[in-house]
Length: 381
Image (cartoon, rainbow, N blue to C red):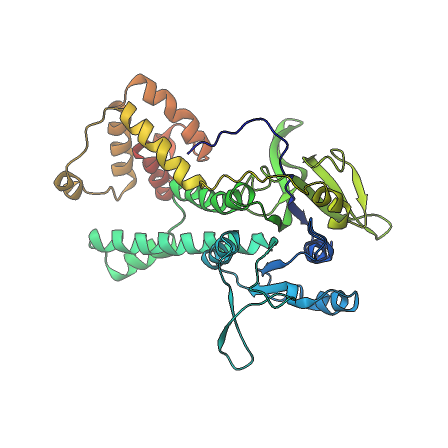
């Protein structure tokens, strides 16, 4: 539900999103949170979720040599979205965390003072791996879906194999994948007052532009290699890069809500220690935490929208009796029938959906059955 409060000074959060090429100190920046002190002057305790499976192990000895007690760092190795979400949620809720001892027994995790480990910082290092794995899982589901459709249509073994092998993500799957990722990240941003660092690899962004008389893909910059727009809600977005002289630097991308640095400012030797003053200024201030997840917010909005539309639901028997199209001509026929049944307003609303799916508007000129299937899904969703 919405949260209201009187205008007052509240704690500033540290919510970093750091991206860049391999070897640009993203992990060392994240581990640098262990060098920082809390409002009371105590070392911060860091839950470090390592999705790159061992990428930070080489840094631990250096930290210990600098006087950092490694009992204040709890490492979790996983490449699973659900496990990242599980550990992050436990840390946000200040639940007891359990680890395996040398004998393989499960024991309560303790911090450097011998108290149950309560994270001050949550790090998710390598969100690219997690977002990739969610896509792979979705493709696996898509293949199973194709297998079930093939069986329902009584295809032979060869036809069934082809259906599974060519199964791709449906148009609606991409939005689900994006929603899943944003739900996790929004929880880390608004659902807790703990400090957060998320790191990502980068990729080259290309867009279609007219070059001379042709439309070509043109490079327009570097963006995080993960869910699109994943970095937007973070308070501080950094892009780490190797400068021409071989030194590692960081650029403030778009914003730094803490106002420690200006937009687009270049930072030498990027480290979270530059933001220690933000923590010190929080002493005595209250936190504002909005626990509601993106998924629960969307569910409420879905209820409102559902009440605003009157629609005739198809009976289960009708849905079961309706046979899915199999040939190019059958797909064109059902698409044509579906579009003709729509109101003018809904026909108009289809245009941006079809373009977003990367499909031509004239379905009668589409000969590829997989593209027709995608078109069919757009007009029937």
